[in-house]
Every structure is written in C-alpha cells, then in structure tokens.
Length: 111
Length: 116
Image (cartoon, rainbow over the protein chains, first blue to last red):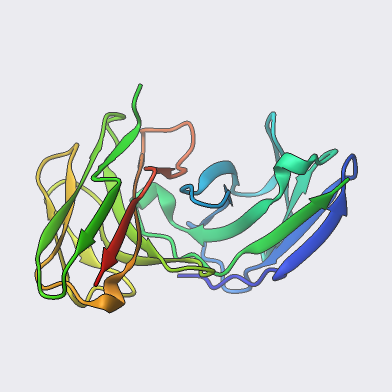
C-alpha cells in the first residue's frame, strides 16, 4: 500500500481557493488516488477520485502530474462549512484493496 | 437509498462482555470494510472483505472477528471487550472492477462504543 504524506493543517478564509497537496512516491501502476472529507462525529465522505491528469466534479478538482507521485486537491471558493479533515488515499481500489488512512489535513476556514 | 447502515449507533459494554456490530449495504458493492477511529486520530483498518466469501486482516485485527454473511452484510464481533476497544467504529463498502463509475467508499454513520 502506497504511503501518503500531506500537511497536518491548513488555514484559509472564506472565498479563497484551497489547494491541498499529497505526496505518494511509491504509487503503483494499478493505484487510484482518492480524497475524502470528514466532519466531526461523521464518517468520511468521498470527494473525488482520479488515476491521472485532471478530474473535476461539482465539489472539487484533482490534479495529478504525469509521474503520479503527488496529487493536489483543489477546493474553489471555500466556505465555513468546508472546515473538516481531508484524507488522501492511494490504492488498487478496483480490486477492493483496503485503503489505509493517515492523519489527514485539518482545514480551518475563517470568515 | 439507505447506503450503509450500522447498528447499534451507541453501545456501552462492561469489560469482558461480547457483542456484534452489524453493517449492511444496499448498493450491491463487492467490498466491505471495518475501521475504528479514536479521538483526534485517523481511521485504522480492522478487517476487510474484498468480495463475498473472503476476509482479511487490517492494521489492528487483534480482539476482533468478522463475518461476511452475504454480499450485503459484514459484521464485526468483539469476543471479550476491553477498555482499549472504546472507539467509534465505521463500516464502509465500495464497488470494484466493472461496478463503476468510481471506486470510492461509502461509509456508515458509525457505532460509538464505550467499554467500562
């Protein structure tokens, strides 16, 4: 299982774009990159998933360079409700391989 | 569409008691997982089942057993509860190959277990 490294915490203000970068130097060929969001007292929620290049959905964008050794989650124009813990995970999800969660990045958004 | 349902939501056990945490998903996912989360910590994998009929140990399997009863249900059993097992337990499920469009996990709302 590829190990990931991401910042422990980040601060932002409402309306700003937030970019959280995750390093995964040992990513394997079949591994996907998945990001989750977790609010206190709730289970994690799937945000976005990608294999290479760029993926965008209604919530976020995921940028993956050609070497796939890192990825960046981009949250456009954050609001107070985006304050949460964000986890970056890497693994062969197509095969049902279990993902190992790290400590995640605690994002604090202020007004 | 209920997603992943966990029961019970809260439980208090005495040291040495046993109990089973239930998890069921209605999304026809192949894979299911059990995680625990201690205060201020990330999630740690206890056991998982990549497909019906298979189970594998995760990071912290000691003191737990699992049963993949059928494709929908994946239960977690504590045979002799210890205070160190006080935690929030999350069950999750995910699709696998050919089940697309993505392979993200869907988590349940958790079971908050206290062992005294």
